Image 1 (cartoon, one colour):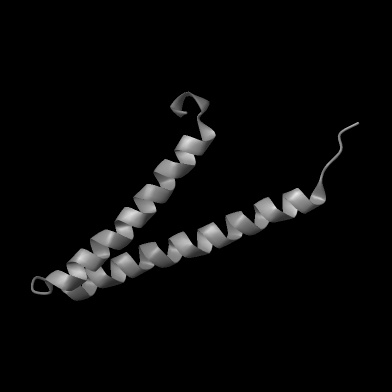
Image 2 (cartoon, one colour):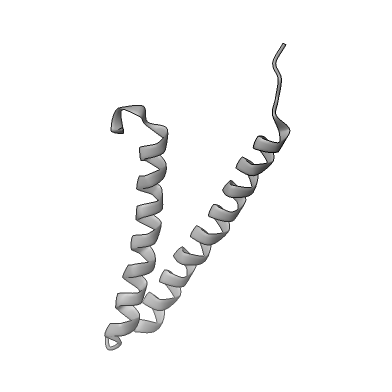
Length: 71
């Protein structure tokens, strides 16, 4: 019979929920900064690229965790 540790399941569900909210906030913040940057604001463009870099880093970390050949 399969035993499920519900406390660990809840921790994983909470982490997934938090990560999805944080990454959505970073991505939408990057889109918003890129939109307001236009052709003149360098600081907003750098902030947008930094937000996108956080999203890319999170995706790459997730792939590293999932694929065992990477570690």
